[in-house]
Length: 428
Image (cartoon, rainbow, N blue to C red; front, side):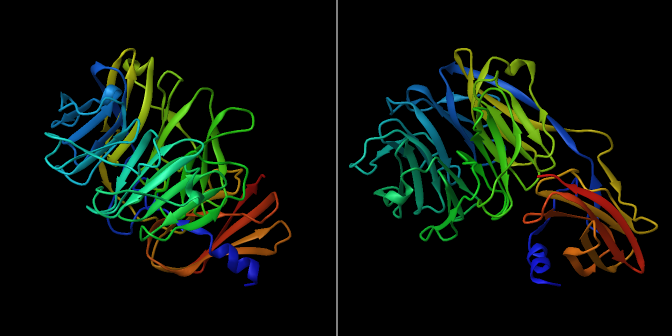
């Protein structure tokens, strides 16, 4: 392979979503849809929601209100009211230790599940509204607040003291964690990423799209919310850790928050478009609207998922706080044994046409050495994304054609002495 081919080989991502990639041993699970059950309580807006398991959770909102639930969000009880300013975010390390942040440098901490809350002190040099809080451990955490400039503050002593990060981080608009100290920060023209909580790598954004909210299900694949030059909000996606972004969908109205539970399935909620809830199970290629009629006329603030089957949305419906709980409803037969194909089968890529990435799937009748060639219309090989021994069953990978020009290309699979070829169209 030449250097360009080797480069393209490095830009594939294997997908592990149940609905897309099948293991050679196991079962195929049909796709799931779900229902959102709304629960209204108190007056005002629920700005943040967080659950440590399927039952125990907290919601924070207007006028410093904090509510807890022990039944997954079906009922809510107000906790001790210690803040006078609105609370915008919450994070719990476990069922006892948690934090809430809000207006005018408000930082609250509980060590007994919210039965009592103590006030902590942010950096006294800055008096700002705090919107997000996250802890990688019982000692290391971050808070994010303000706007133009915004500030990121860090603690290494469980929140007793906070230190403002350098001015390089003064435009950060959103914090996303993949767990532990694996943290992403979104700022104009740059993504900051750390895997140890202390040293951040700066990833310069090379496209015109600037994500204001982000969700990274992997270190390379991420999703974001932005505003296009047309003024419309849009959902965008990156395959290289945030350097390049592509538009998935633009909408009329506002987009408020985004949450992906893996590289394929995620939710986006609207802020001023009647409370729309957008859902994708194929990496943003297509989207459905999951709205229940009871959610209409809502302003949604935050979406949070524990796993594919359990999630919540916080917001406001008319004059009341609202928290919606997601529970899946399986469509069709739940589980069927996967039947191996009688022969090699190469599926049509999707989406097609595409820009710049597309999914390529194929099924192997037996364990085989698999080679996939991609060539241009002149028959010249431009990439060889797969060249390895693989097990029988279905396989899917995401291939990026970044660096190639628009046009017709062909992808050919060679396995077990059999060859199949299909056409794909790159349209930039």
